[in-house]
Length: 229
Ligand SMILES: [Zn+2]
Image 1 (cartoon, helix red, strand yellow):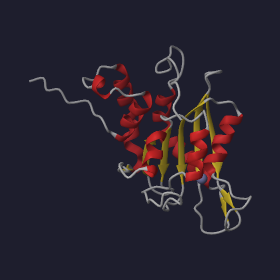
Image 2 (cartoon, rainbow, N blue to C red; image 1 turned 135 degrees about the vertical axis):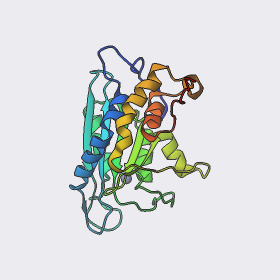
Image 3 (spheres, helix red, strand yellow; image 1 turned 90 degrees about the horizontal axis):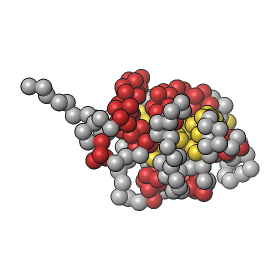
Image 4 (cartoon, protein in one colour; image 1 turned 90 degrees about the vertical axis):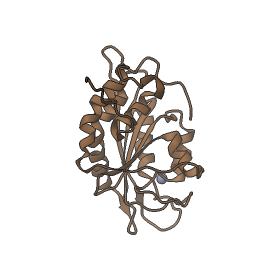
């Protein structure tokens, strides 16, 4: 699950910072996940799930966006059952994208089958969490965003923390309500500010680009207001 971060990609001349792209494109990715969810098929009431993977290729310097929907046409474990997240992830892997920057998933919230825990949004299932832990394309700082289908209520965690939420009782989940994703508009400038190193507390937070993206989007860190008096 851990691995080298992309060397030198935080701000590459002429290149794209994929985490900045995630912050800039967040609401758009949510819309794509909701669109993908419309392709979901379920024999019962659901959940109907759509997922989007934003992935980076070290080899080509490209960014790819891949979508998936779940399908489950019969009760119990059966060959028709496939998760949205795995479909999207497999597409990214198939197209040789080497680093999953973010995965955005939407579906009706229900308690997690493996951990039994309930969250504000539908979490990627334990089987997929295990699949993702085994994939070299998924890193501890891959961002996992889960969103309600009809409301802009979301959770956003680095993958390592997402897994820990299920495996330990030490962590508290956090969900964010952001109708219209207004905060995301400010998020890009916040992200740029954090990356610039001009914020007084930048050294204290010792954050990766993924951490900075989470903070920019959720408002977890704000530049102190400096009084000129
Ligand atoms: Zn799953």
